[in-house]
Length: 319
Image (cartoon, rainbow, N blue to C red):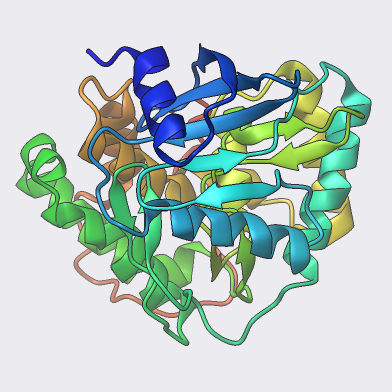
């Protein structure tokens, strides 16, 4: 077990920040060790480090994501003070207020991000990271193929996923991927946060919405929406979904699509964590309608999902 205070102090001293008066560990993240470091002049910075980084570019990719969300998408993110192989240092944010007004403001910010950053291809110019696992972002002009190959089937090679899902589960996932054009409407790619669960929504000292811990790429906007929808957002967040749908012109069937889009995050959780907080059970429930392929019904590409095709929404928490 890592002593978070000593570990982070050692990393901070190694980069020349020797005026640290104290480090207070923070919880919420699952992959790295994080804390608030108070400096001798009374200011604080947020610090994050891995005991063994999964790659030399983990924090560089995260810092880039924060910058592009702010500069291209107009979203508030913390200032990047330092990002190297061993340490990420950011300006501090505040816990979000428990008000509907806050979530209304965030609905506008999220809608602006998704509608102002459309892109002709799906992917990103580099791979980045979901926790300790690589998020593969190879460019693709077909959103269905990108989502199937880079966001769903990609996880089957992970040992924990392979052990958790049996042959019937894996076959059902492949059937679902083949039917994505029937199940999901045609949507353009746009800049997405990529790991937008409720814990990654923070606030500035003035109370404005701000985002942390991105895994950015150009993909469907509803990938972000699904992650928020299925990770137990607070009750006051209901206004976000209503207003976001109004601002972006979402059709009435968007809720039914959330479990399919959230499969990518549940698979990432299974790949990294034991226990998986129920992720495997949710995956199996979402895949249940795809366990038996209809004999006389070949896969057909559609532009809108038939109401009977999508499984029922599973509004359960996931981490």
